[in-house]
Length: 340
Ligand code: DAH
Image (cartoon, rainbow, N blue to C red):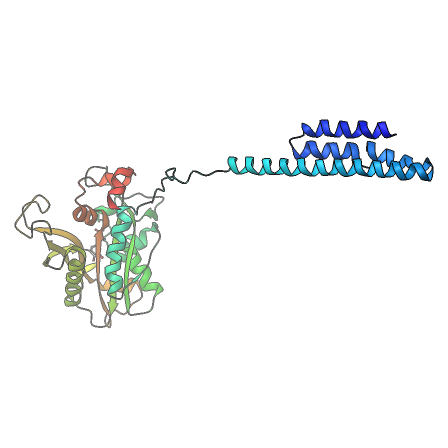
């Protein structure tokens, strides 16, 4: 039995010398000290010995056990330390390495321009409303006092889904929708997408954007329109621009006008932006036609209103010096990033 103990100790020393991992140490512990381990077997077998032998053999076995346990402990802590340092090495972060580039997006110039325009009107107390892009012929034309033979009603100018459904050709139908939906007084701006059957070129696109404006209250006059648009032009294009109203015609306004702004590039002397005239046409406007107020359920004897509508692309092209409208829709990041 003593030689057996010596053998177990020698075996333990030899095996533990090569045990470098926690798993290897554990395996050895089970083999020698586990429930069915070699040393456990010996300790169990001592029941058959005489009391004298039991005493000496017990002491010998316990000292072998203690030595194995101490060796195991030593090896285990070395293996754990090695494991920890290998883990730290693997997880090492090079804090001097350059970071990943974070691409910050930019607002599209059309979004940006719509926000600039509507912000000016918001500051003047207007609220923003929107309407559907798929519109009825009634809202797009009839309610806006458009004559039955008006060329814009043509299939060649307008995208129709059916006899009475189309893609709106302007944001003006939202004027009547607002009159029917809101209480008076009304003071709204309407940004949105519009569609016309145009062949794309540098200044035309079958899809484009407008911002409409509508004010309805008692006693609204041309003077209100003039003052409002002059304030808008100064806030949008610079405090030194001048404005003038030029007579025009729209079915939904009477009288109708076009707003010209003194050229913000040359100051009015004449350049390529204003095509030598010193003035730039910005929008159409006028006093809301009584027929339109009536279509919107408003008493045209008691109330009056003004309206205006401008092309967002046109404003953006003038303001940012963009020479081809198609650039807005190509989603070329080099173009869009210029507006960051
Ligand atoms: N709807 C017109 C267009 O698309 C623009 C316009 C002109 C709107 C005069 C108005 C207005 O509200 O009063 O050409």
